Image (cartoon, rainbow, N blue to C red; front, side):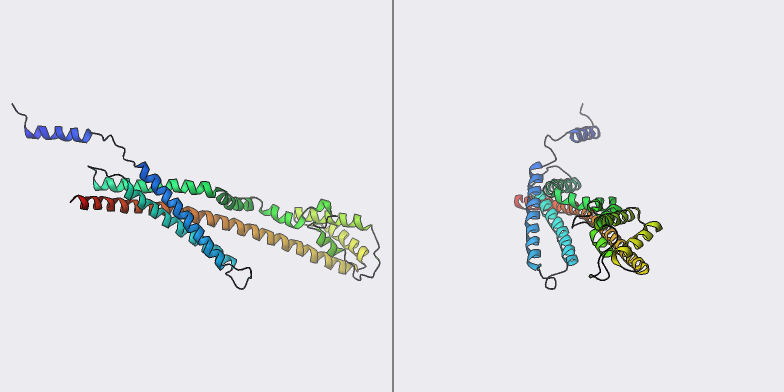
Length: 303
């Protein structure tokens, strides 16, 4: 006796749904091909942008674009390169993958998108390997600036005060300013020049490190300067205040520069992460379009 049709259909559907294809859903050949295409286009567009940028640059400040304009233009170009290369690599992946037979359109769309994202990921890893030093340097600059914000300012103003004899000492200029005679023809008197210079350097170094100069040190500096330069004590006090203000201005400038570097590095990292995320989306969309066009062309040829 034959089985009812209603009992035969579920059995057949169960056998079809449980069947697993022996072929992998991932076309690695197409993925690697798309990644290679994306990497090559990135290199080409990067070199093109570098050539155009260098052609616009000029050693004369008034002829070429400003540093800010040049940096912003370079960042925008790199973002555009990332998006174009990702979309192109994804499209190549979608066009080159093998056809999936018996797969629903939604599943084919998902697979194409996944293929594009995988191609983008491989191309990104290749680019990170080639440009890793540049990325590390950019992020490291911000981290270092944030970590040594105060130390940079102190090092800039204080320098190697222990070797006050050196011509390149960061405090030598301030010492010379403090000990400059009111009249160069006036004979220098008072303490030995080398000992006085070293002592003043140590006082300035301590003040730069602690952030303040005690009142006793300030009074001693005024007396020492008056003895060395022939100035009155009031004029010596005025010179001390002027030099201390110069040191504080230098520390403020160094702090501002470090803060600017930190913010620039943070902004660069955030823009880079956002650009990579949008690049992954572009790669997925490109692969979906390429895969759909490949299937449509295949159907057209067969028909």
